[in-house]
Amino acid sequence: MKIILTGGAGFIGSNVADRFIREGHEVAVIDNLSTGVESNVNRKARFLKVDIRSAVIDKIFERIKPDILCHHAAQIDVRKSTDDPIFDADVNILGSLNLLNACVKHKVKKVVFASTGGAIYGEQDYFPADEKHPARPLSPYGVTKLTIEKYLHFYRETHGLEYISLRYANVYGPRQNPFGEAGVVAIFAERLLSGKRAVIHGDGKRTRDFVFVDDVVKANLLALGYPKSDVFNIGTGIETDINSIFRMLKKATGSKQNEIHAPPKPGEQDRSVLDCARAEGFLKWKPKCKLSEGMARTVEFFQKTKRQVATNAQV
Ligand SMILES: NC(=O)c1ccc[n+]([C@@H]2O[C@H](COP(=O)([O-])OP(=O)(O)OC[C@H]3O[C@@H](n4cnc5c(N)ncnc54)[C@H](O)[C@@H]3O)[C@@H](O)[C@H]2O)c1
Image (cartoon, rainbow, N blue to C red; front, top):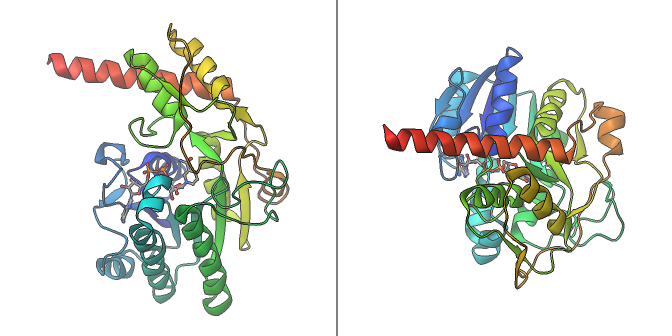
């Protein structure tokens, strides 16, 4: 199939692109490199350094005539979305609508959308949250993701554009940006390996549902062949607190650092965990990677990256 993949220079998108290409699909990556890096883009993909809000998007769809849009490009920083909701909406809502209009005009069959199962539900009433849990986002970022899901429904009803929305839990793994605001596994792994202080905000008892990127990639692959429009949680159903993440990474990296706590970051949810029975029943998707294995693979990736940087510096 011909697939346009937005955000394919970023963490999740680039891992998805690699797998699509391995499966024989033709992939064109659209990314403005605001947080992504060109070296992440698969060499067999066509790379277009373009903003999803650009008027050029229409021309790209006209030329490529994709079967599928896999939409991962986004403003992903929750704090930034709170500080500047207009910028967040501009990228996440208007950028997405620009893509959806191009999909309708150029007869794309389906959209696979990277949504969020953490930010959409807000503070949960029950644990784990299934897809029927009330959506009460606590950040503009969560609001924009929910809004796009509503638009996807509208485009399907009005224009027949099918969609799958994948509500990811906390995704972690190789290529996650360790220097951003989010992505505690990547941040701790990089800092512990570099001998820098890895700081736990608050008492470390906040929980998240950590899902390994390869499992998320598999959900995207299954979504390509799924015959109907639908919304699926993509997580593990397992709650892990930040103190445990720190301890596991301390062990995996061989660090001697003790726990350091700082004041909690405001506006963060206390607990988040997803019920993924729908994805298992309908999409036939189940997470395979255990947290300890995923952590080890993530640490290995950051160790390798550090070695490469050191070697390049010597040359
Ligand atoms: N990482 C997670 O835990 C998580 C959880 C839930 C949902 N998601 C969603 O998954 C998707 C990918 O997230 P990620 O963690 O890989 O982040 P990322 O920052 O690594 O990837 C986002 C990519 O989008 C690109 N981009 C941003 N704005 C753009 C624009 N205006 N035009 C073109 N490209 C643009 C960036 O350069 C980057 O390559 C996002 O939609 C995010 O909201 C991620």
